[in-house]
Structures are given as C-alpha cells and as structure tokens.
Amino acid sequence: MATNFCDLSGKVAVVTGGGTGLGRGMAMGLAQAGALVVVASRRQDVVDRAAAEIRAGGGRAEGAVLDVTRTKELPAFFEGVVKRHGALDILVNNAGTNRRNPCLEYTEKDWDTVMDLNLKSVFFCCQAAARIMKERGGGKIINTASLASTVTSMNQAAYAPSKGGVKLLTMHLALELAPYRINVNAIGPGWFRTPLNEDLFRDEGWARGVTSLIPWGRIGTPEDLAGTAVFLASRASDYLTGQVIYVDGGMLAGYKVPPVPKQEA
Ligand SMILES: NC(=O)c1ccc[n+]([C@@H]2O[C@H](COP(=O)([O-])OP(=O)(O)OC[C@H]3O[C@@H](n4cnc5c(N)ncnc54)[C@H](OP(=O)(O)O)[C@@H]3O)[C@@H](O)[C@H]2O)c1
Figure: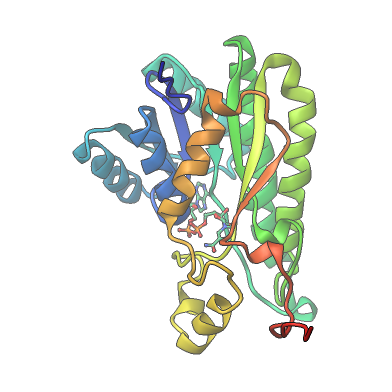
C-alpha cells in the first residue's frame, strides 16, 4: 500500500518573500506538492509573476502585497487569507535581508533594518498565524534560518545575530505552540545565488572560493530547498518540531582547514 506522506493537497500556504530567490523555490515546491500558495511580499509585480508561474505549471497560487515589518497589519493579512481560501495551514517566514558592513562602521539603521525584518517580523508573523492555526487545530511554521544561525563570517554584525535569533525563536515557539499541534521548524540554507548576494557571486574569484568549501561541489539552487520545505510542511514531519535543518551541501559538517592528507600506514 503506497502512502504519500508529503501530499499537500487542500492545504493553504503563505510564503513571505516568495516572489524571488529561495522563497520562490519553496513556493514552487509547496505548490507542486498540492498546496495553494499565497506568495507575499512588498512588490505587486514580483508576487504576481511568481504566482502566475505556479499557475502556468498547473499549481494554485495568488500574489499578495505584504510588508512584514508593518506588524500591526499582519493579523488582518492572515485573516484575509483564511477568508479568501478557507484555511491557513502552512507559513514560510522567508523574507529577509542583510547589511554587510564591518562592525566598527555598522550604523543603527543597518542594525534595525536587519533585525526588524529578519527577527522581529518573523516573531509577529508567527504570532498572527499561530493564533489562527490554534483555532483551526494546528499548522506548520517554517522559518528561514542560515548557516549564520550557528557560525558567522565577516561583516555580518546584525545578520548572524538575527539568524541566531531565528534559531532560538524557532525552538522557543516549538515549545509553546506544541500543545496546539503547531510545528515550528527552520530551514538553514547554505550558500545560494539570489538577489540578496548577487553582487558577491558576480566576483568569480569569490564564487570559486566559496564553492571550494562546499563538499557537494556546487552552490545551492532555490529548487534545492523545495523538498525540505515540503517535508516540513507535510504530515511526514508531524513529530518534528524545534529543529533547524541545514540544506548546505555539507558545508556545516566540516570546518575551514586545508585538505588533511592520508595517514601513512
Ligand atoms: N541566498 C542565500 O545564500 C541565503 C542563505 C541563507 C539564508 N538566506 C535567507 O533566505 C531568505 C530569502 O533570501 P534570498 O537569498 O532568497 O534573497 P531575496 O531574493 O532578496 O529574497 C528576499 C525576499 O524578501 C522580500 N522582502 C524584503 N523585505 C520585505 C518585507 N518588508 N516584507 C515582505 N517581504 C519582504 C523580498 O521581496 P520584496 O522586495 O518584493 O518585498 C524578496 O522576495 C532570507 O531570509 C535570507 O536571509 C539566504
């Protein structure tokens, strides 16, 4: 007897920042697994294009304008999703940004921009969605962490703390929301070429350098996140909560050291 543990037919998902980069990859994956996906971000044309692409591929999607940093508007946004589509089963908190600057030059504006979007908005999106999911008997929340949730690199004075915060927030909410059967997990992507870091990857030397540190031998593509997003959104992961799954081609498994030679017998 075959069972499809990852079938998302009849489920309604919201993916913030779902119009570009990693969010787009996860939105596509959820739609391919059967979910109706609300692709949400600030730019109408971007979310509409991503939703149209999903529909062109036979999936169900709508684009919706949302600025997740306008926290007071979040409850009405998620209630609107329920009104239009009858449910809110899955939330992917993916919208995020970075300000790369040496710590001694970091401004308060840099700090607030990163923290407000990467951490504060994630909490308030979780809160608004979880209030609805609680009433509806459960749900799946997937946050977007990073390798920077657990290690850091240069010029990430706010980004790494924000993503470290996402990891702890994920663990914390998993604890408090477990009684309501709301799973809270996170995906920790490794290095992916997206609008967020396009300027870095345009430098071929830098791109070669980072690729050489990835055991899988290549940087990630947004599609590489689709399967993990579907797994965390589906009943296949019903007893899994409070975890970060790193999707990084093995990068976090090792550390920066020259290749260690084979030992002579
Ligand atoms: N790329 C990587 O290697 C990597 C690695 C680890 C983690 N991540 C994380 O992955 C997530 C997605 O990043 P990405 O690399 O895919 O970059 P991206 O393409 O720039 O995605 C960021 C998305 O967030 C949306 N967004 C920005 N501000 C928003 C706001 N106030 N309200 C709603 N949406 C907003 C943007 O759309 P609008 O401009 O239309 O609002 C955009 O679609 C981020 O959380 C990032 O930290 C990326």
